[in-house]
Length: 382
Image 1 (tube, rainbow, N blue to C red):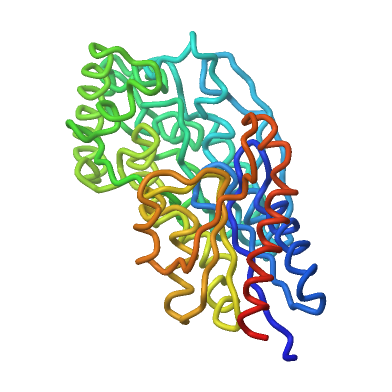
Image 2: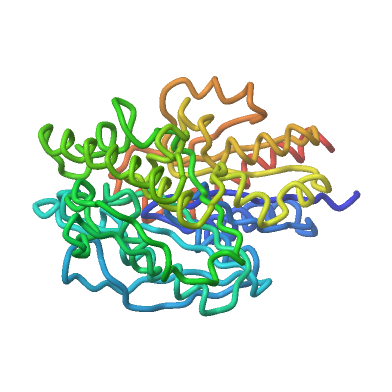
């Protein structure tokens, strides 16, 4: 029998397994049926949590750890970013430094949080001499328009008295002048890519404050103040830097960090899963495969809006490869996913049990489910 080639391209199963661990479990299941199978691990992510881990694992890169400013004033956090196997590309998750998970629920207020630590991560990556920086911008605690990030890289924001403005959501309305004179000169020689599937604009009813502010602790009055601040900020960007970011789709991502990255770093917005797929050469690997396995913790109709299984299926569809997806939770209208290139979808939980038990048994459940799928494949091709 001709040796079969499997490409394993799952996302992480949150709180249960990293994408790399899912690959390992899938391989064990396949090997129980096809012991001589050729198996390619391609740990995936969609630009959110786990992006650094996946890209580092997929390219044999490494992580760099450092202490940076957290979302709150006077808060220090231990964060990391990745250097990929080519040693020329850095990957950053803004949530590592400026994420909502770093702020206790009682302290969440986007008027007082900052992306300054994200700027410190970018600066650290520049110190490594990289030529490309990928920035995943999901899970932020901030609505500061990226002024914290920019300030960490040398941009100066002053009020009408010439005093430095605090790099928070509250500081946005106070900005009178923006100067990039002392901005890190290395920025102009680096390619910055924003990995995000958020299409919100900076301001208005679909803007950063209105849509995401309440999730980060803002009251309705605070949402209105933040939106006013972002509008004012956009006008100063246009006036001082000739940068018009207000209506760019995606500029409202991560509380307006998208706008700041576009304005100051000339960053390009791309679909998160596409960024990851391109970085790990997913298309080339799938083109030579017989079967593709993917999955994530939960799947429903929203998976087709830029989640990892969607991105993997889109690539596989071009090469007419069958795709089998696994998930811990199957939600509404998963039948919508068959039209995007997924051949079949399987839940991995085999019996009624607590969430804690399911999370703990994730590797065994993935291994068993993958074995069952592979046995079905074997019975068809025999």
